[in-house]
Image (cartoon, rainbow, N blue to C red):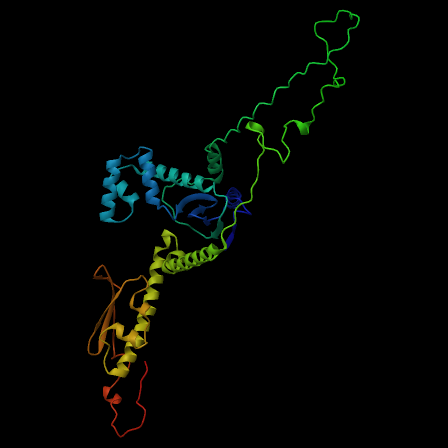
Length: 389
């Protein structure tokens, strides 16, 4: 059973909490614009996380070096030994005593948490949850609860940017009242007395909010400084003669993108590192289909000529094969060797045959053919007898 959707409708913290509350076991994949991340859950708790753009070993090596758990020379030496011996870098680090297994598991847990904290910042993408009975993870790994992950992610959020300070409001300018005729002296007033707003003097007009900033009329020159009036001019349109150039470039980019997708179709169908076996099976099935197509063409040539062709290009020239059939699904050229009643076919990489990918076919065992059947006397008008495999 699988559940899928987009991060526009369901936020990632809500999805993680739902899986945790229902104690689900399975794999949650989140695909964004730049990367694909897979999260493994066991009874609602996180036990592994992996990204397409960074392998587990690359991320772990960065954590080990950054946290000071292993020195740079030891890490370089371990990487060299791992490249020569193969296997897993995690096992090699423990076997060669570069680090204790408990410390290695701590680093692996820290690397998983940081990868998930980066994932929580995604706001766009697609998700899909595959429910299952079991998932693979490193033995001894301490599971990470969703609550622990969310709390830690909130604590590590960068501080929000402080808003820019607002410009100080202009100070009001006091306007001296107009002179009044002399009157009899008023009694002594206290030092401080409230001033009523009262009517404005006739000589000074009361400013209105709309007249706070004196913009000049449209037919006058704009004022300099802070009171300069902004003029919005229309954006110049692109020349009509260049419009077809943009459409041509867009079409060329679309063709290039489609061609790139065809070249990496296996990676797109099975993109995750743990799907290496499935990718290998898919390549072998496609190679077997290609070999069968070449075998039909070669035996058709044998029926017509009485022998196998000297080169595969002869089958292309006869219209029995396409030019693309001269390379295997991975793009390797095919080495073809013909004999009297059989031939061998194998892909070549860097001038060397790829072991385990060769094939050999012969006439015997498929159908019996006497080349004399194809030789007709000059007096006979009967059509030749053609046997198909």
